[in-house]
Image: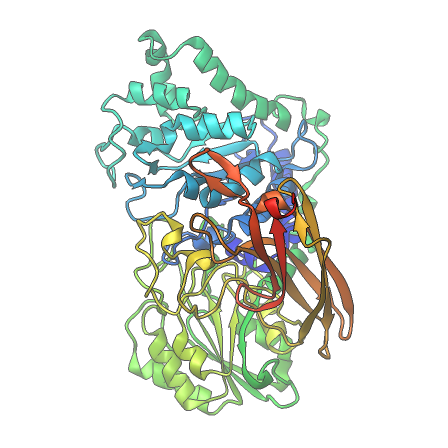
Amino acid sequence: MFPVTIAMGATWDPDLVKTVASAMSDEGRALYNAKADGPRSKHGLVFRSPVINISRDPRWGRIQEVFSEDPLLTGRMGVAYVQGLQGDDLNHIKLAATLKHFAVNNVETGRQHLSAQVDDRNLMEFWLPHWRMSVMEGHAQSIMSSYNAINGTPDAVNHRLLTDILRKQWGFDGFVTDDLGAVALLTDSRPGQLEPGQRFSEDPVVATAAAIKAGNDSDDVEFERNIPTAVSRGLLTMADVDQAVSRVLRVGFRLGAFDPPEKSPYANIGMDVVRSQAHLYLALKTAQESLVLLKNAQNFLPLKTDSVHSVAVIGPAGGQNYETGNYYGTPARKLGPAEGLKQLLGPRVSVSYEQGTGFTEVGDPAAIARAAELARKSDVAILFLGTNLQVEAESRDRRDLNLPGAQQQLLEAVFAASPDTVLVLMNAGPLAVGWAQDRLPAILQAWYPGEAGGTAIARALFGLDNPGGHLPYTVYASLDGVPPQNEYDVSKGYTYQYFKGVPLYPFGHGLSYTRFKYSNLALSAPTAAVSGQVQLSFDVTNVGDREGADVVQLYAHQVKSVTYQPLKTLRAFKRVSLNAGQSTRASFTLAVSQLAYYDTRKAKFAVEPGGFDLLVGSSSEDIRLRARLQVGRAVQK
């Protein structure tokens, strides 16, 4: 059981994500081979993953399932994940990846009937680039259309989305399936239905025909029931049906689902790969790389084993009850933080646990008092606070960014009892922990860390590992300045690209137990043609006294424009690991076309001639190096 997807996003390490997905596909093939009973096997070969929607809104309940708020980071992770699942041979894929939910799916409340109002510039610049990457570079074999509508047209019958863009522009040659029951929801309410649908038609046969003609090739039961009638009524031709069937079968042939098992290049993947030592280690490594050090005043962390003799573990996420996320089975092994600390520190250090409060329950004064007393008499208190599926999940958005239940009350009581308190956050969507940021000496973000979470967290707290993850989204100090959830124009103030307030933690933020110096920025040329490219290179040096990893990030900002532009936009990134005193020369090649914006008048991307600031840093706010690139007319003088 690996950490959730948002934790993978925090690694900023596409190579690691590809390795994780490859391990998943090995185990998936092993299960399929062990139950090799043809295309209707219980253990199938089409995996409905990854979710590559954008975490635009911090209240969204499914942030745990996505990679980032940024299209580039999401796209690079999506490509890596798809390639890991499917393998390198498109004619003999290991598993078929399903990108979901296409597109502009970002709200749980009313998701089955809402219509996202999105202009073409937002659509092309923010809502679709990562899909394009995952289709054109990753060659994903399946796409899931989402419940919502875009500008009044439900995605399940959106010809522009599913045919004009997906197939004609991007060359997608797999099959499209609708989200569970989406075609049925086109006919609005049904008996027993929890939510109203899209009111597209009162006739399920009409809805089925429209979905197939738009580019939806697969459905649950609506197609089986209604296609024959749609053909007999002239709403569909046999050619329409054959086209949809052929798209599904093409993926089946690429999977080898109709070949004798011995003909498959993956036939020899056996059950010995399932929960193999290599995969167990990979679950731990992913958790380790995902940890983000948010605050570390006066180098409070790492804790020193020679000076800590008693540890108070406190909070609802500190035991075995920590969250593992949506769409996870029951783990064969799950090691919580308290147990992880006990295993690491051994009998010479006393590790005691008090829950203090639940995730969402009203506070129990007696339980909080017991937790505070444990903190008072221990050398250090470690608070494990966060969320679970009762707070954020599919079909459940949050109303605010606060610690749920009585956790803030517990936090304040424990800190009052012991100033030597570390906060470990175990959540998916951002939490506005400004009170803790102002007072506690150290804060570590640990996400929903998978089955090896307790080991990874313990090792980081006591310095066996150095946290190197960076935030894949903005952590807002509050909802002040954050637009309402039904505002799909990100330029109104969403994400680091357009938010004009002061975040609690900026996009890309992540500290370390060591320090990194950036220097000697070189730009291959100060000017470039619109069709050209430039190379940036710079030195990154670990000037601290221990090994560590940093994520170097390249942003661009257009100095002047005839229209609105983002404050800055991520254009490249790289995770760099260095020993103490070690230096490396990092470089990025930037195509000038990457600086384009979508010109709605011309209905295409265009680079506006002028100046662009190129910004290199360790987060979207921690900019260390700058260069000015002049593009276009200035080059042609």
